[in-house]
Image (cartoon, rainbow, N blue to C red; front, side, top):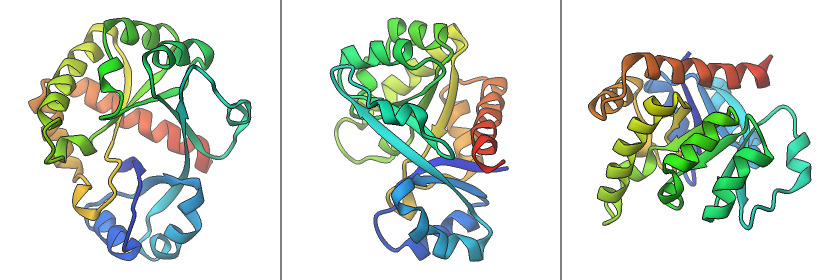
Length: 204
């Protein structure tokens, strides 16, 4: 099952879903509010849609209601260093999102906390396609992150966070990217299995 756990299309949903289908992606995660609109097009392409809720966390304040949400995949995105440190402790076994806004918080100390509390890192691929100056910084941090995955045996999933169809990744291209960043095959396989597990919890 080919999965992209988080996409965030902003225009031309029909075209977006058509490209998803042609890339062989069979399940996508989409913001819960967008699901009804996306499903108008995904049903005809045999693409399953999984509701996502992304919680931006600052000053370690986590809304209590999100802890009881069901039938969706919840991810927590830390907006400051303190929140990055506290989320693994406050919400064990949670998904913690790292992207261009917070990748600087993903260091050895953070990786240790994530592993210790059995959390999963959801790593955004969108910034790797950016034309902005911080792209090189993100690539360097991505390479460092691949080392942390192995050092701490982290649970990790890779999501496109695509806003436009050209930001989607073919599964083989993603595999090649991760191998070029020196992530071993067994870790890539483990990531794919983990994505399937999250999806099955919602769809079953």
